[in-house]
Image (tube, rainbow, N blue to C red; front, side, top):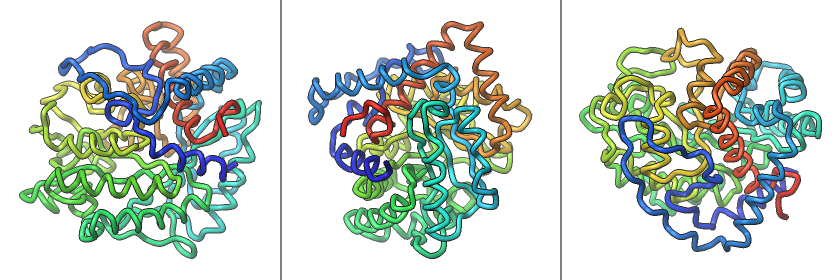
Length: 408
């Protein structure tokens, strides 16, 4: 099944996605509800996908959605962490009983064979009772430098993004194709890379999450845009879904949201921020997801962190920039979100217009799912957003050949 998935992606990545590379059905973008609310640009015509193929895909997605139980649908909205030190069967109950539809490798996995055999085990959990025969997205964070979750024999450690940008764009695409082929062969469908954040020279290494480690391609958003595209092209050529992160940008903060709630405010960002350009370039290049930051952007929303802001997720990303695909959180176990119950973290993100909650702590799964169910029961608008989110995830999986009705 992995071979089919990767072949399906490789054959579809050349397709132009509408507007800013959106891959979803579009049913989840609600009208402006926050402080941004500008009229979105008219979407560009889809030049590579015929109306017939688009209609067929939409029919398949709807067919898959209707075939799932409510619990199976909700499981598509979680991605849970698989720690390298956990036993092989550590996530079995979450996939089989809680119907979780997506997994991420965390903690530094050593050696190709360990990853490959674990991916095969996870794929073996997919059946009619667990996920409704919908395949799992298996993800890793293999951006390069300090961030490389797949290590040891069989995996190349990509250099940090600043060093990747010393290559020509064509050279980076060729290198990224090789890195992508390695992780694809190990059964990984999604690489949570590249970083689309721009770090100004005047901040540099004082930017704790990105600049300190050279995770950015540069300080000029035009340069960052070029290399984001080159990296994504390489992943796509290898049959791996790439993403862009951390929207709307972590380049101006000083604190790392993984470890602190201090220094995580960007006072400069607006809807016309040129630092948004690399994200748009990545969406145009076929990124499969956009990952939200957990930072604060008072010029966009004075009250909410980005992942909980409808002004940022819906009004800016979806409506103004035209993104119609999957939106995912960074790990919601971040220190910047401390004090917010796990269930509220999931509900708040989906209410803002998001899709997949990345939860590195699997034990919070039941609490998150129950909170989503409870909110759906009392809020019809939220229930509609859940349906749209599930359809967007299924649309991405259809492109990968992961639905029972997916073509070829």
